[in-house]
Image (cartoon, rainbow, N blue to C red; front, side, top):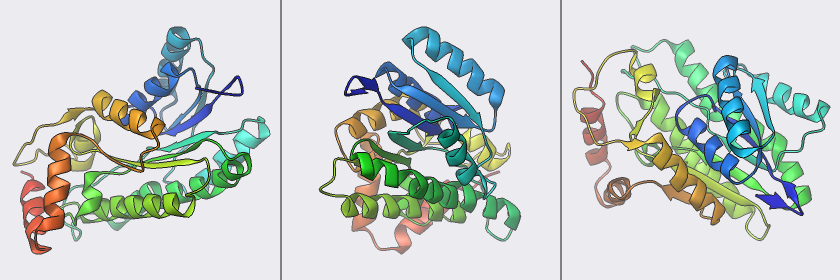
Length: 263
């Protein structure tokens, strides 16, 4: 999209695969200038070439590891040095780890908190003042339906997504009355490499229907453009979230623990 004839600049973290990659395609179709950020330079460059050719847009590639606490400030400084103003921040980067809390190395859990919470919050804090000063654009955070209940078998991951959901909804209320759009995208199980990374090659004992990353991204992008705050993708996921609100607290814990079993 264009503001006063100038294309929006959209920064997307975790853009090398999955939902992040598909969100990049959605914003590229709007004619936006894109900043693609992830750890894999090769994957980002390949995507950038495709998007430039398909949509005749400018694409900037940045390689940073958001598990490093200094990365958000370094990203902000890099864009400032280039004179690049960000209109839409898409905090998509994140990962999970499957297993009981006592089994997963604490360093892995701390890295997850850094990527899923601390870096997301830091990037939001760094770019929000500029968005407020211009009173346009917005923030799209990628959460999960996992944020609506505790998650035995992926305890820290579910907790990080609960933070993303609560933080985004609170921020949207604080900024009500401005022209900024603040949204949180909450997908359920999605066809991507997320599960393989989280489970370290192990398979879940139970399977469920999954949405494609493209379908999730398209729904999230469309809802963001419409100004919706909380975006739950898929009718089944809507039903599950609704049921969580109706049942005693112990019930979703048991169901999620059963679902997250691996072999």
